[in-house]
Length: 364
Ligand SMILES: Nc1ncnc2c1ncn2[C@@H]1O[C@H](COP(=O)(O)OP(=O)(O)OP(=O)(O)O)[C@@H](O)[C@H]1O
Image 1 (cartoon, rainbow, N blue to C red):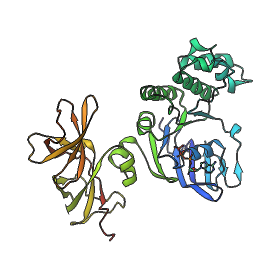
Image 2 (image 1 turned 135 degrees about the vertical axis):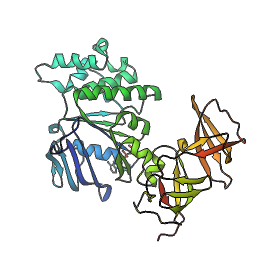
Image 3 (image 1 turned 90 degrees about the vertical axis):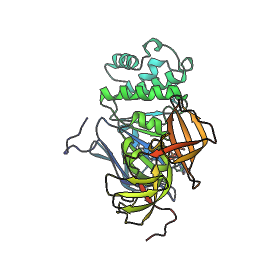
Image 4 (image 1 turned 180 degrees about the vertical axis):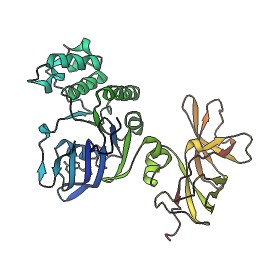
């Protein structure tokens, strides 16, 4: 749903700080979610993702800033609307289903006193494809089915916001991918706004419209998956999202730089990603090369040695050593099956030129 410019965001975190005792673990964190959109907090273990989710749910207080839900202030220093008054649904990785209640009773848990509870339970069970299992108990279900029940239970009371904390972490990869895709299909028709926490970028990419990459309690970049991959705002994001390598280069003009694989031409003036400054001629930079930027080409005069290879079905991911010793990655269709130690022709094909000031370059 595209919000009008006057509509306040459905969820707004405005410069929040969260501390455990004297230790601040979330700092000056801001983000907004439009109604009906799915956001994601993506980051390594311990960066503060769960803490942010708990603060939104009302289980942690904020020491600075404000959290607003549909324009209403729900958390600020000295004030915290209790969790049960926030109309937030939550799904965690351990399902937390009530073992002594049937599937239908679990789904109806948040509907006590609601007139059409029975119809709503039936509707939710149909939605998650578990109508046949209504009378079963959680231990009689598979992990994936239990997670669907948890989702149905969270969505049944029509929450203003759904929070999901690593909801598929305990499931195998295939099921995770399937449930991730299903989740989008479930949330979109009901216009549910959701915020997902994960450290798995594939899950984030499959589910979310917008993703916040977090590190040490701060958001490093809040963007679409495409932008995070192709336009990472800093080295942390470049490293954390997707695979890639950095290659040393020297800027030759506003639109050109030289690396050992040749001259790279950019459509836009070359700028250091972290500072947004134009790189002057002669500036030493590190160029981000994604595996799809390095193309295998038998006709190319530039060759690199295969030092490792990973078979991925339709393609190989080769790790290649350049004459200087630098390593780059390349995805190559899997009918090009080269042995380790072989030299193969490569060339660069960059759509987006992302450069950072060289790590060993003195700060000017
Ligand atoms: N109840 C608590 N008391 C004190 N410190 C805590 C508490 N909960 C979390 N922390 C600390 O706060 C920091 C952020 O933890 P948090 O659980 O939010 O991270 P996370 O990104 O969700 O990690 P993970 O992916 O491992 O779940 C960590 O350093 C953690 O040790």
